[in-house]
Image 1 (cartoon, rainbow, N blue to C red):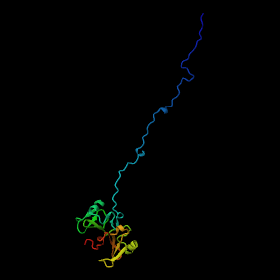
Image 2 (tube, rainbow, N blue to C red):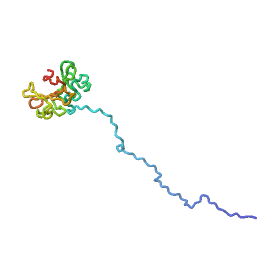
Image 3 (cartoon, one colour):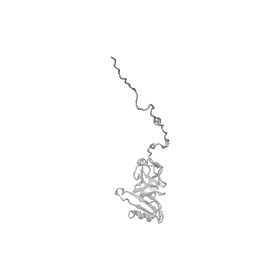
Image 4 (tube, rainbow, N blue to C red):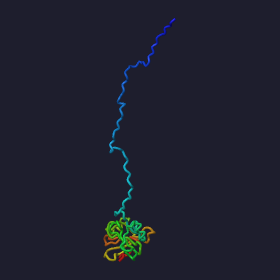
Length: 209
């Protein structure tokens, strides 16, 4: 007896989808082309500058007359210490060891002279130029202005060589400076010279003469 088997159709790989492939968006498949950025638009940090030592200020405002001398140069200093303190700006005309002689300061405003006695700074003289004291007194100021600035701190004496002229000797305000003075010479109307330093040399009218 023969049995008839039902015919079974097995479909492999058959789906309800269409036989056509889905379209591919080719724009997504394209490689992204790198854009060149102009060099001048790149935000790069500025170059690091090497620290520079500030230039030495040689303007008049950097030089101030005090009862002890001028700036860092004080009466009583030895020549060796004065040279070191001024970074070797003190220029000797002689040996510096004589009874009295003068030196100058390199790169200083015109008109500044340094008196040396026996190897030490004795006083500083301002013979010309606008270099001023801490209070602002300078060559060319009137006697009246000096009196206003220093009020009761000065002694007024007649000039030895100029008729009608005066010496205004200004006393210090602190006890540690008791041996130091500032002396203003006038022609009777205006200041013609200023000197500052230690007694008795600061009072020498003739200087080293």
